Structures are given as structure tokens and as C-alpha cells.
Image (cartoon, rainbow, N blue to C red; front, side, top):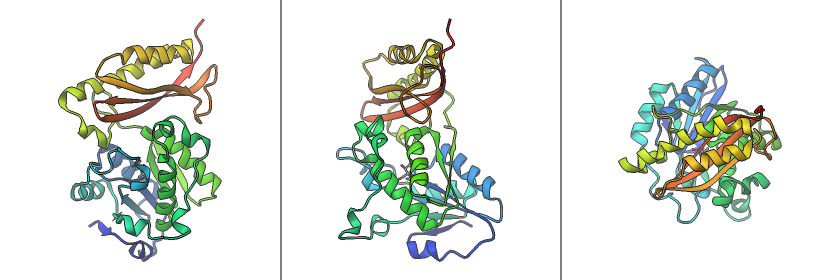
Length: 282
Ligand code: PAF
């Protein structure tokens, strides 16, 4: 039976175990993508280990006018999914429990550096400071040995890895591939905002990424042109389409790279990315 805890004291008081602790940080509204992370975590630490799933809709990573208020909160079904995927503990804290500091301490955050102002960070100022600060706190309180994140949030994963290196956090960061619906749309808690008509439009995103992948032999510009053309529809509002190196520095002329995009479908902002290989066309 899964344990549900809310306070830091309860997390710190979990009984010692022989194995490692794996943590899967989430904002809840769990779907098959989260289940894959929890299953990966369970496999990694085995029966001697402990898998903790955190469920916390973190206010500091949402900007003004974003969807903090309407973000789905589905704790009961999250508990069932976490348990069946192999979690031992769900930590679902309140905001006051996570941010229980005041004065000087309340103003201390993790600075994501220049990458934090690019791609997602350009459209969502302050987003990555909020993400990195809460992830650092969640991993430290849970004393995570290993933590699992999805590649769907590729820039988030890149920055969390960099933070663990920069701050010497004693935790291994593992990224797992994006889980997709049958038509290729990346699973996201935000997909539930889409109407039936918008859901059909959204399925053009993975198709466009396939066009981009095919164009990659002709270079980064060709990738961007192909994706832009494939997303040309009045119902789709492109925020960015970019090709970067795998560490999100500027794209190399050829070799391994990443195609990343953000598109608005109505009020819903969807992001996705895929590994591509640039160059090779004669
Ligand atoms: O990816 C998410 O769900 C969130 O950004 C995370 C990592 C749980 C931090 O709030």
C-alpha cells in the first residue's frame, strides 16, 4: 500500500532502507509518461530501494496569466497511478510546506544562467528559476540518490542536469524518452485542455517534426523551413521553432542536434522536441 505524506518532517522521518532512493518530481495529473518514469525509477533501485513521487503544482514556475489556477489537480487518481507504476511514497506538500522560509531566505533562488532566458525562458521569464529552485528543494528533502525526468521538457532536463553539476548535488539525473499517443502527440497534462477539434490540429506537431527530421540532411535552416510549412494553419500559433546542439548551445553544421518547438493551440501552449542529425546531403 502506497504511503502518502505531506510534510517535510514526514519525508525526513521515513524509515532507513538498505537500497537507494529514486525520486520522480511531478506536478500531478499523472499520465503514461509519468508512469514510465516511475517504472524506470523502480527498475533502477529494485525492491531494496524506495521510489518517491512528488506531486506539487509549483506556483513559482508559472508566470502571470499562465495556467497555475486551472492546472489539473487530480490527487486521488495520481495515487492510484503512482502505486500501480511501483511507487512506495507520494509526497504531496502544500505551498507553505515547500516555501516555509521568510525574510532573506525567501528571496534565495537558483539562477539558471543564460540558458534560462532562451527558448522556453524567453516566453516564460522566471520559469526556470522557479523550476530549479523547487527541484533542488524536492531532491534535497527526499535525499534522492537518483531522479527521473522526461525528455519532453528537454530544456528543463538540460538545466536540471547542469544544476546538479554546478551545485554538486549528490544525485544522478536520468532522462527518459517522451511517451506519445498513437498519432505521435507527446503526452502532457496540458493536452486535457484541448477541444476535440484542437486535439486534431495538435497532431500536426509530431507530423511537422517528422518533416523536420527528414529535412535535416540539408541543414538547420531546412529543418526550420520544413516544420514552419507543416504547421502553417490559422489554428496554430508558432512561438518558436529552433535547432540547437544537444546541450542547447548553437546548432552545429552537421551531426547530432535537437529540434525544439512551442506552439499555441487556442489557449494551450504545447512544447515538443526530437533528436535529429544535421548534414550529410550531397
Ligand atoms: O516537469 C514538471 O512537472 C515540473 O516542472 C517539475 C520538474 C515537477 C518541477 O515543478
